[in-house]
Length: 456
Image (tube, rainbow, N blue to C red; front, side, top):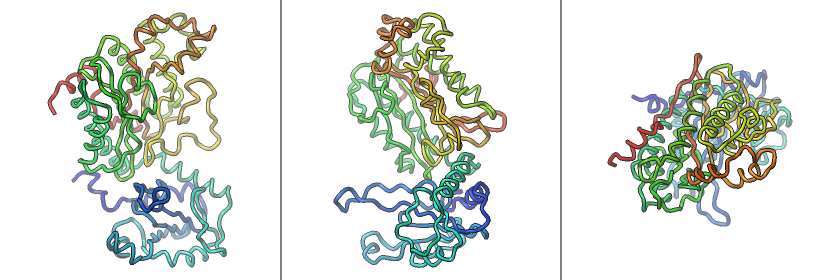
C-alpha cells in the first residue's frame, strides 16, 4: 500500500496540532478556526469550486465545507464542529457523514454539531483565532483574543507548516509523481498544428485521471514569446513553429498539498541551436543551485548562485558583454532573471514561512522578488526554479540606460529573443545532509527529445 493510500482516510493531523500548540506556547484557552464555506458565483446559485482553507485543513484534514474546529489548549482536546443537518441540503446533496463517522474519519477526539459551538466557546478564558477567522456569527459573550494574539497564532501556524513531517512529504511526493507524469504526456502530445489550449486540457485530464482533481494553481502553457510572461494564463495560442519552445508550469494537489513543476520542450521535438543554448544556461543554473541546497545555507545565497551562473552563460553566448563584476554590481542579469529562485511549498503553492517575523526584503533587482528569505533547514520543502526570459518590458529599461545598456549586445539579444523564455522547476525536500528531489519529469535535453519522440 502506498504512503498516500495509507493516509487517505485519516491524516495524522493531531501531530500538526501538537506543533502549533508548542509554537503558540499558551497554557489555557481555546483555539477556534472555521473552515471555508461553499461560495456561489455572483448573483446566482451556481456553486464555485470548493477548496478548504489551508490552516483549517492542516489541523483537521477536513476538505468539506462549513466545518469548524475547537482545540482546547490545556487538554489538547480537538472537537470537530459539523454543520447541522439541513433537510433542503440533504435533498440536493445527499446525507452527510454521521458524527460517529466523522470522529473515526478524522484525527479528532469528538465530532459535534454547530448548534453547540457558542456554548463551548463562551466557557473559554480566551478564544484565539487567526486574522482571517470569521467571528461575526459568534455570541457577544465570547472573549475573543486581540490582534497581537491573532498575529502570534498565525506565526505559530507558519512555523509549524514550514517543517514537513514524513507523511506530508509522502503526499507531496505523490502530487509530484502525478504532475511529472502529466508533464511527460504533454511533451509527447505537442506538435505543429496543436494549441496551448489542447496541452492545457491534457494536463488537467492526466491529473484528474490519476485522482488529483484540483490544481495547486492555474497552469501556465506558453509557447514562443508567451513563455516570457511569468504568470501567463491565456493558454490559447497555436503551436505553429517547430523550433518554438513550450513552457508548462503546472502542478496538481493531493489531499490539498501542492506540487509546482515547470518544464520546457520544443514543439517539433528538437531544440534549435538558440533554444539549446538558453536551455543549457538555465539547466546549469538549477544544477548549481541544487548542489548548494542543504541546511544552513541562506536562500538568497542560492538565488545569487543562479544569478552568477546565468551571467556566465549569457556572457558566453554574447548576450552580455563587459566585466562580470560590473554586470553583477549593476544587477543587469535581473533583466533576464527577474524573479526569485523559489519558495516554500506545502498546503499552498507559495506556502507560509518564507519570511519569519521581522525579516526584511532585500531591496535590489531580482532579490526583492524572493518569496522566501531564511536559512534552509531539514524538513523544508522548496521549489528551485531558475529562468532566463526575453521580455522587452523588463529588458528595454536596462538596455536604454547609459550605465547598464553597454553590457547588452543588441545583435546577440535579437538572435536569441525568439526563444521566449525558459524555466526549469523542481520540488525538493531539505534533508539533514543535503536535499531530496521529488520531481521526476526529465529535464536533460537528450531525455526531453527522446520523450517528445515517443508514442502516446
